Every structure is written in structure tokens, then in C-alpha cells.
Image 1: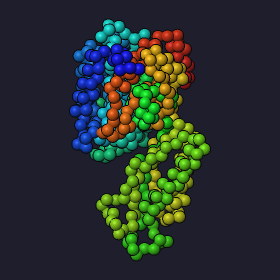
Image 2: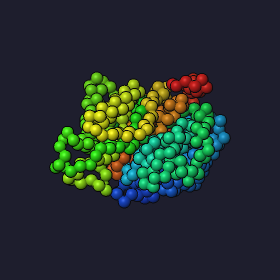
Image 3: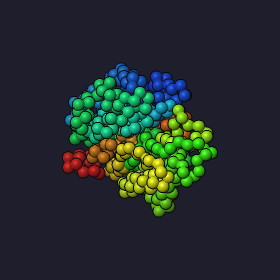
Image 4: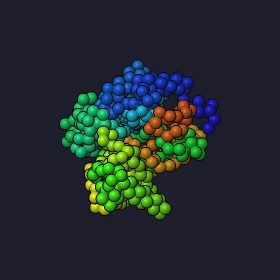
Length: 444
């Protein structure tokens, strides 16, 4: 698609609104490290949501906060609609992250509503846009907290996880911003899932694939599940680096190194056999209060993040981790405390919605690339709650979760045009079968 063609798909007024929103929200959440920080369930997150609310209301949209204290926006005539298409993404970031991860999807949904408002017409089916809180795991450990609360799947263990900075619980932080915690603690959905016809989310791609093939957007086929241990301790015994022989050591560092090498060997074998797996240790350190170059470390703290599109591989890695820590613990005379795992199953995007997105892309001259998502998204929660779900990826040079996120505005506006075209197609004959499948609770 040429630049001029892309420009015609979205008005200059909407282009200016998008640029202004991204710039203003970047300024509101500037991190001393150079990126953006919008902590989950924080005053900054709330301020950003209220800023978006004021812009939506000034444009004549209905904008209000739901029982999860997420911002919901819609055309005024659709406020009381019995059923609706839900468009969403999240507002929060990782610490010192980028400005587009999550926010791009919220702005895209808002632009679609503004486009209809400017034209004085609506969508074939009512559309609501939700700006979700708390998707990132960096602040408390659990991910997708807002969408899990909406679907009634946020567990008590997750609510008891503590903030990385102030050590207060997720439960307490959610209560601080006004979330209806009685319902959340009871596992009661904060929204009527039966009223949601489908969920669609636009998000930046968090890897290099689209950039490597020089494509602006893609359609997502599925999302990896994950198995996470936020804080694992390996506990050994301190000793002098020169005085304790190898056989007498209880070296926590060497034990963790052996564990990670064992997991890496399994990762390599799974990939060689054609399986899907990624494994990351993003936290790894000895005790800064007592570590020293001449001291055998007695405590190592680390994390493990395991992801796959195959639930059998996730189960296998869970079993392997428990087996290996037991064997290495006995072999090296150390103890591992792995704590409870935080688990999210893989999800499949609705084939019917993927097909509809593919058709919408072709209609506006976009080559419909279909790919899987390595990162997790709120769409996974809605899909696993039997809400037919779909995603659009927009190219982001330099990936995500860092201050160098680089989403070109023309790429973004092509994603917006694709979303709008898709939403305008939801009145076709396929919707009848989609609604029927929702009544019967089946996954498309």
C-alpha cells in the first residue's frame, strides 16, 4: 500500500489526534531512565485513563469506568446495547518501557469510534472500547489482572502477590483505585461475558518478524501460554572462595547454573524435534548485602519464564523443573524453593474472525500476513473464557518492553484502517453463526 493510499484510509484529523495522544501520554508517564512507566493500579495509570476519558467525552463519546476501574468508551447511541463487539488493550507498561505496548490498541479503538462519530454513523454492531489496567506481570508477578478480573478468573494466590516496590498486595492496590474487590475475591466476573459478541485487540508486534519481512501489519493466529516462577531461591552455605574444596561446597551459584544449563538443553531438544518453546531468566542475582568476590554465595534469587503454544510442552517443562531441582539439590547439597507457579494456558484466536480480518485486509489493499504471538495479551484471557477473539499486530522496530519501541505512525494507521474495516464487516452473514456459537458456549 502506498503512503497516499494509507493516508486516505484515515483522516488528517484522526492522524493528528493519534499523534497528540501518544505525545501527551508519553509526557504524563516519563521515566527517569528515558522511557515510560505506567505502573499497574497506580496514580499514573489512573491519570492516563482520565485523560483519555476527557478526550473521548469532548468528542461526544460516552466514556465511563467499569467495576474493574477500566475505562469504557462507546458511541452514545450504543450505551445500552444488549450485545456488542469489544475492542481493547492495556494502558500499563513495564518499568522504563516504551510508549506503544498496550496503548496503541486503546488509541486504535478510540480512533475507530471517533471516525464513526465524525461521519455521523455507527457500526453494524455496537462497539465498546476498553482501556484495561494491569496487563503487565512486571509489577506484581501475575499478568492480565484486569481481564482476569473481568472474566472472574483472577485467583486468590494472584491477589496475594506483592508489588515489586512497596511490597503491598495486588488486592490492596486494586482496592485503592476502587475495584469491586468483593466480586473479584469471589471469582465473580465483573462483566456479562454473554453480551460480548467478540473481542479484538490491536498491539505492536514484540519481536522482529514483521520488520524482517518489511510488512506493516499482521493477523494473529494464536498466543503462547506461559509458566512463570517470579521468585525462586537456591539456598546453600557461605564459605571462603579459597579455603573450601569443591566436594565440600554448597554453592548456590553453581547449582543455579547447572539448573539453567539443564533447562537450556531441553529447550534445544524440543526445538530440534519441531516443538514450540521459549525460556527466559530475567532475574538472577546473589544477595547484594552479603555477596563478595571471595565468598561462596549461599543464596541466589532468580526467575523462570517458560512459554509455548503447546500445553503438553508446558506441562512437560513444569515436571522437568521439579525433577531437576530435586536432583541438583541432592547432588550439590543445596535447597531450591521454587514457590507457586503462575500459569496461563495457550489460546487460539477464532478461525472465523481471522478469516474476517483477512478479508478486511484484502479489501483495503493490505497483504494479510498471519502469524502466532510469542508475547501474551489480554486477548488470551477472553479467548480462554470462550469469547471469540482476534488480534492485529503492528510492526514495531526494536521490539517492546524498552524505551526504544519504534512504531511508525503510517504502520499504526494501517492497523487502525484494518480494524475499522473489520468492524464494518461484523454485520455480514457470518455474525449469525458467531452469535449462535456464543449461545452454545463453543470456541470458534
